[in-house]
Length: 312
Image (cartoon, rainbow, N blue to C red; front, side, top):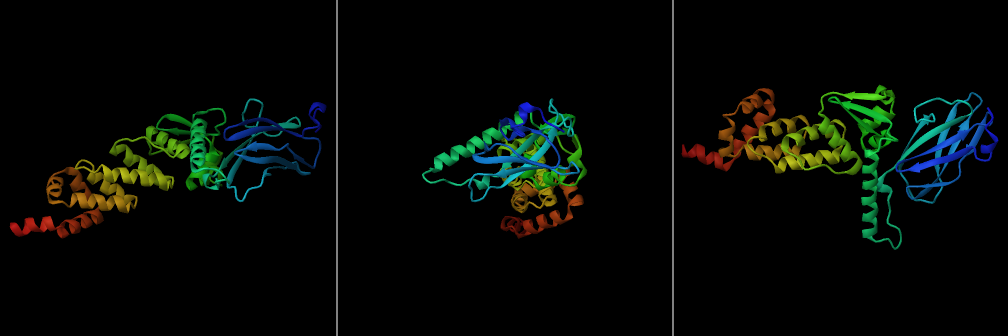
């Protein structure tokens, strides 16, 4: 298929570069062909897009790092687009490609004469840009339905942050080919905060019940950083009203620190006497016998508890 003469000098033309992605057009002269784009700058590095099409009209897309760098870890995702941004196959000798690049933050290195304050500013800027990317609807390429609400996101960002999303969205699992993925067993507000953490490394300071649900979501998607934040907050906010549910949660999700904090709190005689009168304590005995056994052992070893027994 021949390209128009106006574009014959530029088989790969960069159309648009934005936060997290860029678009380019590829004009096909004949088969087989191997074309390269002009060098462009993205994420502080220079890149070149390349396209190879063989006799069978199989398309192979590459993005090559041109600039010198010791190590750059990046995840790259391609989508074929029509003129309106929808997914389409190659037609009429020309097609548009959306390429999304996520550069891992641990590849950032301090340059000579670069102060730590400069590096911090770059990190803050990255978080800000990724936060803006989450808010943008223009280049999102995956949609989730959670508890009746719709959320748009970017496969490459989710995959870079979570090995579970990596398998579901970029691996062989069926979810990777769905236009809208419906998630069960999660509240919309929890998923919203989960996405916010994935893009910005931040979450809002919320109540115990919400942190419990968020910890479950973090464990579901193997987000260890978020899991630790939620566990620390639950340890900080233990009360008589929350300790039993947190005990069950800690046991279910193997949260050793949270389990230890809850056992120490619940084993105090003044707390244990009040907990035994509550329905959730009886349910804990029934549903989590191993936790109840640990609590009984911790309480029996308590010096304050022993004093009460000996006094009686």
